[in-house]
Amino acid sequence: MTANIFNFTISATDGAARRGTVSTAHGDIRTPAFMPVGTAATVKGMTPEAVRETGADILLGNTYHLMLRPGAERVGRLGGLHKFMNWERPILTDSGGFQVMSLNELRKIDENGVTFKSHIDGQRFELTPERSMEIQNHLDATITMAFDECTPYPADHETAATSMRRSMRWAKRSSEAFEARQGYGLFGIVQGSTYEDLRLESVNALTDIGFDGYAIGGLAVGEGQEAMFSTLEVTTPAMLADKPRYLMGVGKPDDLVGAVMRGVDMFDCVLPTRSGRNAQAFTRFGTVNMRNARHADDDRPLDELCECPACRNYSRAYLHHLFKAKEILGATLLTWHNLQYYQDIMRGMRAAIEEGSLASYALDFFAAQENGDI
Ligand SMILES: O=c1[nH]cnc2cc3nc(NCc4cccs4)[nH]c3cc12
Ligand SMILES: [Zn+2]
Image 1 (cartoon, protein in one colour):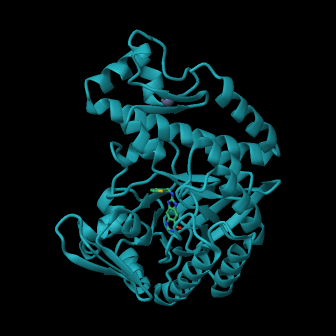
Image 2: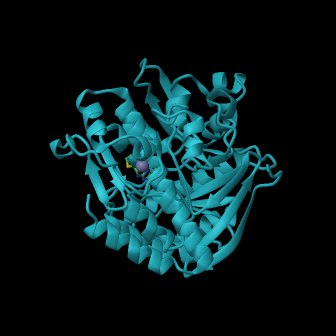
């Protein structure tokens, strides 16, 4: 049922992990949640119905791509992203800043925002906190992300402080420009690189502004899992306990389990979809490259225990053939499998938190990843 207010309720906890529900104008999100990435208003190779069948409650859309093509105002005129891509459940859109900085060489950043040239037609664009809020409003995003700067990694303390403080000024401008609507939310983004004092300063600055949820940015940028986890260990305990926590751009299956155990509720990552198109399968026993010749005569399914269409109806030999022949069906089937496997991990953790058995879930998970037969 669609709520008319944006709300987060926690139904169980297990250590630092939380089992919750985010209720929104477009339906509920069961947390811990994984958001498939739908960059250009599509989860590549998947229909929205198929994405729903994997168990996803919410998708991510990219402001940078959509503002360039087909254009934010055009999507707005056509009824917004939900109608445009036929996904009526929650959609979170990012603010565009991260992708301008990571995808576009022809960009300039200053206190006001970022200016850049389109990689499609060379047209000049400007992204500011105010323009980003306007674009995400045209897209009719259920959850809007504040406009921030992801501090490059590594960064010395002074650089990280300067970058984080600019993002906090942009967070304030984002909050002031955001058009609040019943059932819609605005999330702030914590920065501060891997410095505990800066992370705490950023959490406090965002808490003072007041957001519907809080993302942890500036991670999954090459710092490695140990530094990511130690940064989470100092950051999540300082964040409001009754608001959703979203770790941006994460991650591999073991990142998800470790981050949920450290208090994270929401995730997005291109890995399951991008790897699926590149013949890499994520399974409970580890990753499998379906282009490897050893699969050519293997009549077994990818994973006997998986209920996705790829594992129910096809063999490894067939998947191997599809990738060798560069058939589109290979990308579709393996994308479906990877997304369903990611949702199975989230389902497993949601159930484990409800039972108070997340620690043993994690032990079994890591053991199978280590010595499974793949
Ligand atoms: O601080 C951030 N602010 C706003 N968006 C982000 C997205 C992010 N995505 C990753 N990692 C996944 C990656 C995707 C492409 C290159 S790295 N880390 C991220 C950090 C941020
Ligand atoms: Zn499967």
